[in-house]
Amino acid sequence: MAETMVLYNDIARDLATDQHSREREKTIIATRLQYDLISQMGAYAQVQKNRLTVYAHIEQQQTDHLLDFLQQTLKSLLESLGSEIMGVALGNVKDNTYRHLLCEGKMPWLTGGPHAADHPIKVAPEFQQAWIDEQALMVNNLHQETQLPSSFQGECQSLGIRSVGLFVMHDQQGRPQSLLLVCGRFPGYFLSEETGDFWQKIADLIGRLQVNIGHSSNPRQHRLSDEIHFRQLLAKGKVEMYYQPIVDPNTGRTVKVEALARLCDGGSIISPGKFLPAFGIPQLRALFDTGLARIREYLIDLNVPCTINLPTEIMADTRWLKLLPEYLTGIGLDAQRIGLEILESSLTDHPDICQALFVIREAQYPILLDDVGAGESSLLRLSTLPISGIKIDQRFVRSLQQGFENLDLILALRMITLQRGLDCIIEGVENSEIVDTLSCIPTVLHQGYFYSKPMTITALAEWMACEVQERSLEPLPKTLYGWYGCHVRKELSIRDALYTIPDLINIDALQNAEMCPLHGIIHQIGGGEELVQLHQEWHLNYAQAASQLQSGFSMDTLREDLDATRNKLRTLIERKIGLRPA
Image (tube, rainbow, N blue to C red; front, side, top):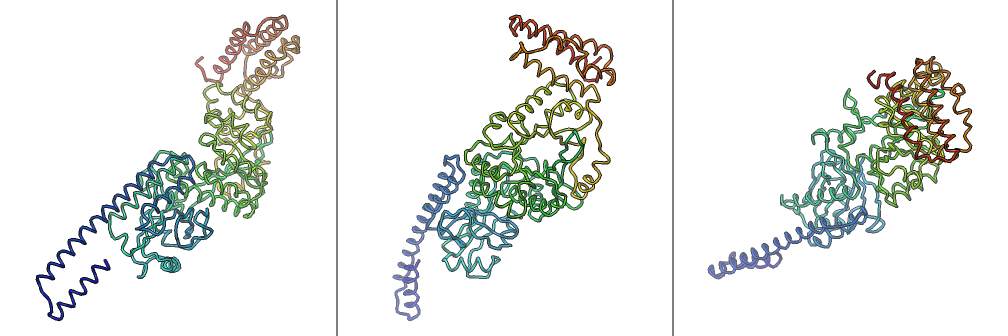
């Protein structure tokens, strides 16, 4: 371009003095224009080649580590497109501030070297608006008046940056993940619509791939316009925490509460099932931070411990995860006030995440493994993860309303946690029949609508003020549900003894049903004479099996008769309570 300008300047001078040959100058100009056109076409072709190369390189990366992927991506962009851009950075916007997550090259606000994990926060309300609107922001001449913060504009100019583009990175479901900041070497870099489209494609490609590496694949459940609206509500702070009591069934007292986020849209309350699928990693992180702030602000006066869900997606940032105890302590939430719940069904076994969780437990913060039984490897995780307790998935519990198939599994899980010194919370306790059925399980806590729905902080304060006077509990079991639950617990213990220590079983005591505490309350809870006789038969059959085992019989030969006795009793109970036709 400089050479062309010198040539055209000489021609213009000749024309101005009338000392020229028009034919000669026409020839020079035509030749030069042809040369310029060829040069520009060559440069354009090279740019397109570079862009296709870098896109393919990013798409073909193979790594299971998110940080490695992002570093290699930014490095590839700079190496292939260094003639166009001065730098690229990934960032996020929250509360009108912008923070770099990772940088490569010469970037504004860059401190601590090109691989620093965090960079200074800068106020950028225009970036915040672009984030909320999910629209690209492109400035083609930083020497002119722009909509960017003056501090950012000045720092860009001092570094020789002449144009800036900010592109929202979406995952495959259209959820924004973070921002891609591109700094151009020349003014007018983003004037071409094609350039803007290219960088938006790069941003979305990175967004899709980083989410795949982070193992997040929730399906879209709403229109994109609804999802954007949900994200805008979060960005504007329209979040309210609801609290569901976790109760000791033996005393009726609230032992702790679980904090659950809701979005407020005018007079409407939006549940997590609707808005969470619309959130990417940045929104989940912002929601978590907002929840902690609300807990610190409102719950501290009630003097009740609280748990909050730690989204699996944000745990991929293990550096942040390791610093979480320090952050919690700094905002006044010590280990006696707050605990974390991690979802078993979608948790990864990455060693860096496990190591970060150990750091949290070493700081004495409780970690509960949520929805145990819903995933594929929960029993293994009871030994490999540094958890303090579990929450049994509510699907096990709610199924008790249709039958008792899962009752022995619930009992077995509790026995395992007892042996490992872990707390146990049973979710999905919806009615009095389930409460009575679970009365057989020792030292567990209950959570569910039978006690209370999630409620506002005001309602929770009223609930806790009157809970002792109004919710005193009667002795359990009170119904056939509870009776059978206690019977199953006893049966599992006796079966275990038959397998392991048959010689120590007192046969005389076992065959006498009158010595069993459950036998004496059958008529009281409406069991009837048929249940009395069948319960006596059960005791006799199990005592006979114990006697045969002490005489040298194999348990394999007795199992069929014992199973028939158990199924006979269970069928009668289910018929009496209406779970089977009469």
